[in-house]
Image 1: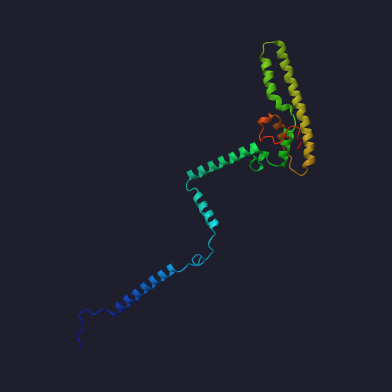
Image 2 (image 1 turned 90 degrees about the vertical axis):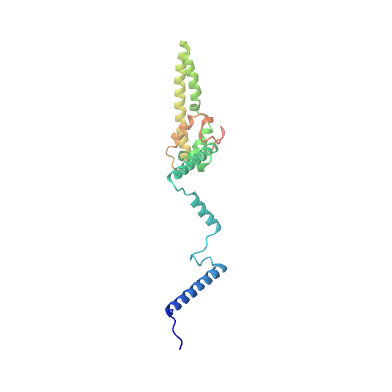
Amino acid sequence: MGSNPGHPVPLGFVFRSRAKEEKAQAADKALVTDSNETRHPEAPKGRPTPKRSEAQSQRRSVANTPTTRKEAAKRGREERRAALEKQRQALAGGDERYLPARDKGPVRKFVRDWIDSRFNVAEFFLPMAVVILVLSMVRVGALQNIALLLWLVVIVLIVLDSFVTAFRLKKRLAERYPDENRRGAVAYALMRSLQMRRLRLPKPQVKRGERP
């Protein structure tokens, strides 16, 4: 029998090395096979793959989410500015969707149309006040007396016209909107009647004499 080598290799080391090499080769084959095969969309996640529109909306929401307080404040200012711009356009065009809360609703729209369709003494108060003020500044006793008389006439006419407007409007609202909330509608109408027609907001949507 031949002589044994001086440094025999343990059998356990040989088997372990061969086993490790076989496992590594099997893992490499599995990776290559998985990369070449078509992956089932439900296999790795256990749920259906989202649609393209849903994925895009998710990406946009993530991209639009502010990450810092400064960005959040900037985003809030931009949103408020956009809302105010829509509200301004609505006041000019009468779009009900973006009107302020005090101007929304069928009752308020009817009140605006009803006031805008008629002549109101109160809407001429500002130009008449300018005329009366000029007359009162003239150093003539007769003109100053006329100015004082005009003040009294204008005030009486405004009070009487406002009383008649409130009475008639209440009656019309009760007939047309018996189940709607009419609280504050008369005061809303009187405040609008005090403004000159071209300065009213929302802008008038009816012509004079065109009853709503």
